[in-house]
Length: 138
Image 1 (cartoon, one colour):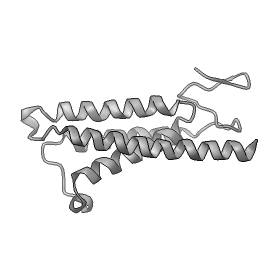
Image 2 (cartoon, rainbow, N blue to C red; image 1 turned 45 degrees about the horizontal axis):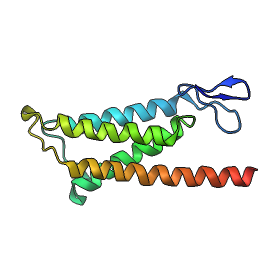
Image 3 (cartoon, rainbow, N blue to C red; image 1 turned 90 degrees about the horizontal axis):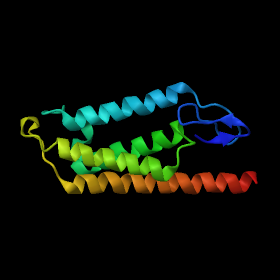
Image 4 (tube, helix red, strand yellow; image 1 turned 90 degrees about the vertical axis):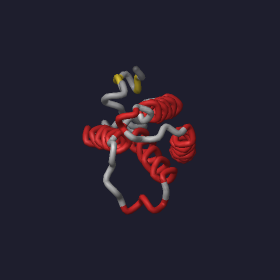
């Protein structure tokens, strides 16, 4: 648990750089997006979406890029490396679960690589953005 100015910032009630509390709806939005991605990944026959024409890898990268961005906003006190590690692990778990025969899904390590690449790029951009804000504020 991190401390900022004597106040606990834990991941649940993270404080921003300026001490304002993040709204709870941001964390709810992150968890809703995570559940949506998990359900869509594990449905035996997921519904067809307009982005299906862009390919499976694009869908993976979009889902995990959005999760990385939402996670970094909803939990600003969480180290970006830890968030990236956990989202990458989630992608690996999804691929393992997709190997269950009754789901009629394909387990593909390239999907996990796409997930992890997307998370890495988004969190790298978040890191650069945060660093530039700190330099301007300081």
